[in-house]
Length: 270
Figure: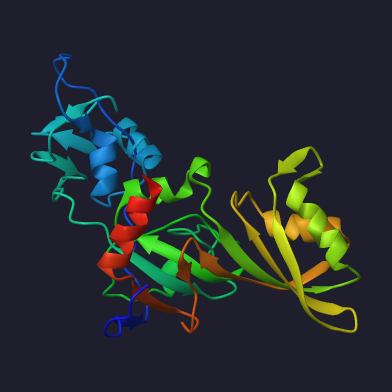
């Protein structure tokens, strides 16, 4: 990617992310041109399609004062649509941010048990953003954030096979030959994991750093695979998601990705 002037870096906390649901039907039931309401609201950054569906069920979304009853509603735009009584603005171009998630924070909007979330770290003046994928509470590193729910969905679809790279500090005995077995895929406790590229970096005694690149990102995938080899994971850092790198972002910092780089990447997904 070409270099440009340094992007703005935020340091602080964020505004809470809005919730979402899905997509309603036209009040008259007649066919209409346009897109499903959940897709439009997701693009506007209200929430994910699934959450928008839940919001519709809860009676939180209206069209010209009438409750939207079903997620199959087709619209040409968001004129007249309100969420919790608030007018929804038309979606602006998607924005993408690189965020260095610290260890010890949940990738969630809120946690009713009182655990800290990433939104306790993001800047208070931050526009509404949603995480692309998740990082476990005790995993740190690159977490991409976006203003566009449709782009979030696009990035998370397994069919797109977007690579994620992690570095894990582990304790135990492992060889490069064992790690290379992962390239053929592996099944653990009935769960199959697609091919993983793994390299043994440096070792001190029985401690070592291992770099792993995968495309699925199943729940706790890296930890489960390494524990399958009898290794204890003491630190896990995501360093890359697609072409976007953690780089020298400090913990808790968030930086906008240049629009040119975002547009070029989205073209590559077509």
